[in-house]
Image 1 (tube, helix red, strand yellow):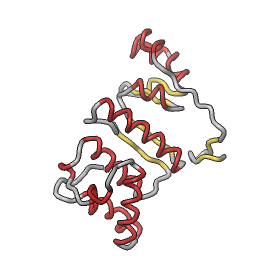
Image 2 (tube, helix red, strand yellow):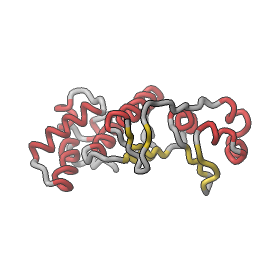
Image 3 (cartoon, one colour):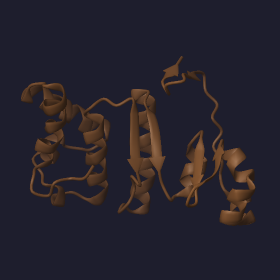
Image 4 (spheres, helix red, strand yellow):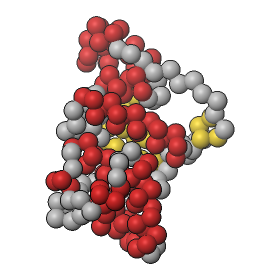
Length: 178
C-alpha cells in the first residue's frame, strides 16, 4: 500500500472499512483512532487531519501499517517496512511489528533485505537468491551451505539467531492456539 499525497490520512484510513465492510463513517473513524494508537502514533486527531507529506518517514510507515490493520488481517504482509526510516526508527518499527503480531495473533510475512533482523527475530526464514536457496529455522538456515556461500562464513557465524520458545502452538492455518 502507499499513501495518496493529495488525501488526508484520516480519509485514507476510513476508506478501508467503509468500502470493504460497509461500516458507517463514524465507526470507521473510531477504528482509525484506535488503530493509530495501536501503531503508537501520538495525537491521533492531528494525524487524521494531516497530509502524508506533513509526517515523518517513520510516521508514514506506521500509517501504512495502520491501513492494513483496519481490515483486521489474519496475515500481515510487510514488504521492506522500514524503508526510508532512520536506524532508531527501524528498531521501533520492528518492535512494533512484533507487538502487533502478538496482540492481534496474526501471522507476519516480512519481506526484507535486513538479514540480521530477519535471522534474529523470526521463527522461519526463506532465503532468496533468484530462487529459494534455503529455508527453515534461523539456526538451520545459518548452517545451510547455500546461505554460507551467499553471505560468507563470517556472517553465518556472527549473526544473532532467534530462538522460538513459547507456551502456544501454531495451527496449520497460521493461527495460534494457547
